[in-house]
Amino acid sequence: MTLAETLLVAALAAPLAMLIAWLARPLRDRMPGLLAFAPVPALAAALAAPDSAPLVLFRPPFRLTLTLDVSGGLLLGAAALLWILAGAYAAGICAARRTPHALQNGGY
Image (cartoon, rainbow, N blue to C red; front, side, top):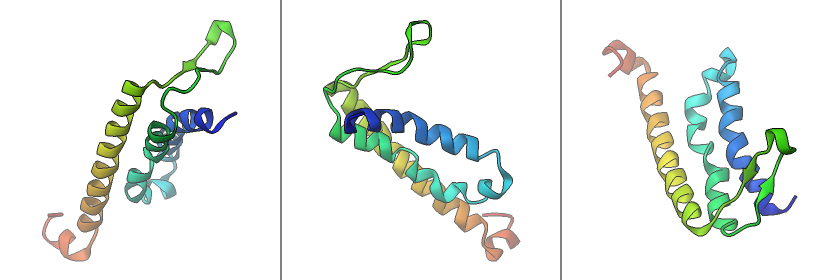
């Protein structure tokens, strides 16, 4: 696999792995701090793999083809940046709500 192909697969795999990790109770408590890191592979794919060759993952009955053109790379990069900003904001809000002072005031 080339770097572009690896980044395309990681752009799908990282958020799905975090979603599966959310099911475990010990990892769920740490997850808000990691929300901003889920779209990092997608941002890297948008920057490093525009106009890459299509990646075919499975054989014909279950074929999955991943490809990224320039306009798709721009949209993927913009969505990844927004997700990173929203994840960082959400992590800050969740951290503020877990402080003892915030818990005394009803969580706000």
